[in-house]
Image (cartoon, rainbow, N blue to C red; front, side):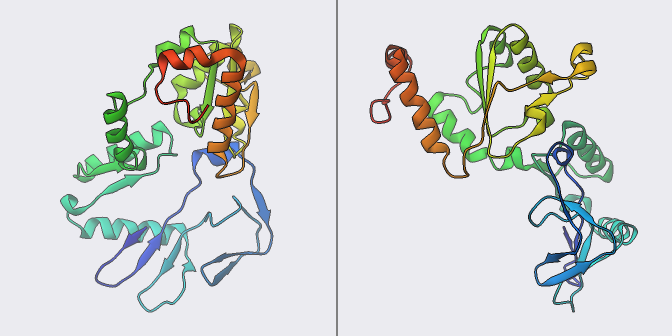
Length: 255
């Protein structure tokens, strides 16, 4: 969204995210309501359930509601705003759900424009967790490295979609299953790329596709704590108490 502080004009530019092609969409033949404004079209609209816009919207200073505009006008408005601003006062901020390629291209555009003010929500939103993890575990990053998966027999993927955001990890999951390992996915959203995926760098996967998950759990939103406490209880009952005592602390209240 771009806001002109002088005129008060706001422009919403919205494009489909990469993961949209791997998740179900809903066809709405009537119209699309944004705030209190109803945007109608003769053609059916394809978009996710919820306020996901597949076209640009604008609200002028005198407008009480957003209205739909064409892509040419939206891009012209965005270009005019960028030309009128000083690069050192412009901030490029991207979604953590964007692909690696899209994030790379965005930072190239930002640097060609003349600014190093570049960030994304994966880093910005997790700065606090990085501090907390450093204090608890001594590292703000993961406690394992990708190579650890070479020795793993079971991987639990919770709340992530490596099929679109981490191509090296999805490749390791395919290799893990080939050698007899198992993959459990925990995600309320059914990501098709975590069910089956084609790894471009692997000819067998590219030609025939690869099954990613052996078990796909879709808990209700907000029930993740109950799910993981149930998994912990199952680990204890399966004889994992000694393992937990040796490698964890303060597990008693949860077990």
